[in-house]
Image (tube, rainbow, N blue to C red):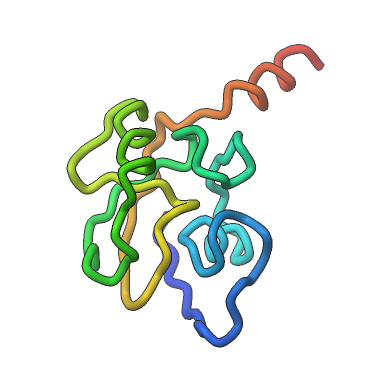
Amino acid sequence: MDKTVEVNPDEYPYGDHGLPGSLLDIALVNGIPIEHACGGVGACATCHVIVTAGRENLSPPTEEELDQVELAPGSTPDSRLACRAVVRGDVTVTIPTWNRNAVREHDTLSS
C-alpha cells in the first residue's frame, strides 16, 4: 500500500511517538501502522524502515541509532529507526514486512 502524507512542521509534535516530527510520529498520527515495541525511545529496532528517497531530508542518524539499526532483520545502508528520523522535507520509505512486534504477537497468540 502506498500512502502520501502532507505534514506541517509548525504542528510538530503530532503525538508522543518518538522524536517530534519523526517518521514514527507522522506515520502513526496518519494511520500508518509502524511497530514500536520500546514506545519510540530508540531502544529496539521494531520501527525499522528503509529510506528509498529523500535520505538527505532526514535528521542525521546518531551512533546509538545506527547500533540499533544493525540489530534489525534485513537492515541496509538506507535503514533508519522511524522513531529517531526527523523529517525535514520529502521522504519515501518502505516498512519491511518482516518487522514484527514479538510482544503483540505473543499477546495475540495467548488470547
